[in-house]
Image 1 (cartoon, rainbow, N blue to C red):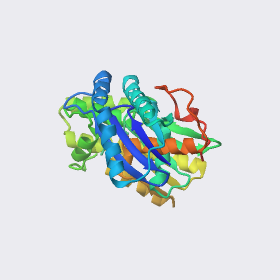
Image 2 (cartoon, protein in one colour):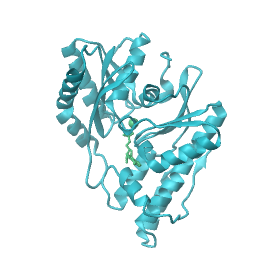
Image 3 (cartoon, rainbow, N blue to C red):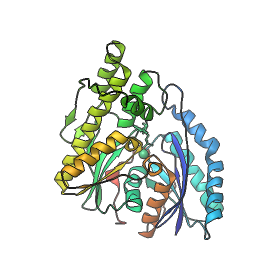
Length: 325
Ligand code: AMP
Ligand code: MG
């Protein structure tokens, strides 16, 4: 069984081709800006322009190394930015028609979790899903992926990007903030906001902006302190979910999961509680088509038939009945 997956929930247009056991191709092109954040219509235009080119490239790469044919086309149906989701859905539909194979839409957040079992030894992890728009701590309990904790306002990536934008760095700001943070060890006190199992970031963002505007603090010190504070909040909630569910594995997902300090803090926490920490390679942490294809294979093999090729911009992780495990 070989599936081609299309990712287009936000800034990234990705095309991946995977088998049940392996990632065969994983291409992506991201919409970026020098200054400012994502403009939905511009991101969708970007995706539209490159969609078929990237699909063709992926299929050519696949054919060069592999025999066999593509059996299934999969796309991210949500959650995400409407105009961007439409591009992925339309590309999938067109491709499904031309290859004469079924097309199914899947949930993007769930795909971040599932791909961990393709490339790591995780069996039943707690997922710390730290991406641009989404920040959730998720685990499998009683037939569903339950959200144990999440952000009450903005996603961790969007929060970092917003501060980066404020200090004149373009999108995506996460990698640039990481570089700045490495230049400091000077911790500046910031509001630490964990409420039960949830976190809140907007107060810290305002505080950071005010501190930067006051000119009393360097960008390096603020970047360092931002990472130390926000990541400690994520790790605290992840640890509490592990304790609550009695799970011994932590998997990281999402673009912010590429951050080496966040990975280090997760690894330390896991070591201290006798658990294991797993991080997929970067190409599978960020939004990508391979994880979409893999999720499609899981659902297709569990007997799922597509009813309607549609988008679901607001679909939640815990809306999905997990019948493929
Ligand atoms: P995703 O939505 O999962 O593709 O992740 C995109 C987000 O990841 C953006 O907000 C980026 O700024 C963020 N990101 C990517 N690399 C890093 C990094 N090294 N450190 C922190 N954030 C990052
Ligand atoms: Mg994502």
